[in-house]
Length: 88
Image 1 (tube, rainbow, N blue to C red):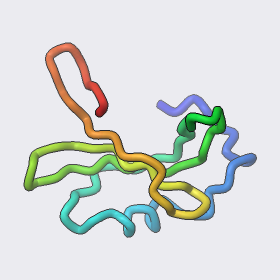
Image 2: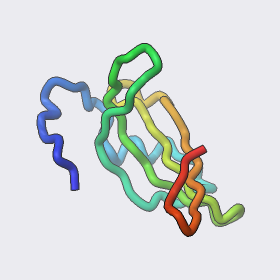
Image 3: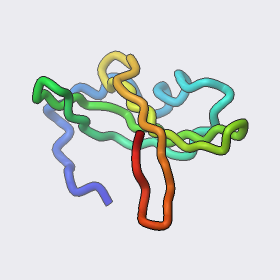
Image 4: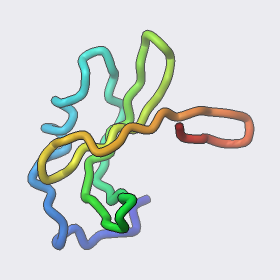
């Protein structure tokens, strides 16, 4: 559940639907949601988080697209284990 609800101070020009249109057709979109991601310089960037699955490799990943520009901000591969989920 998302506990943060004050999105008014962040620029979400790009809709979740428009963000998924930027994802490769080789990937299956499983879900999307608004989020904030930390950057190395201490800023937070408003993004659309897209959970994708590759049928070719069987891998899942989180793709973060800038909510103001649609540009790719980050990609995290999800590594599942008996002890939880790690990112790479």
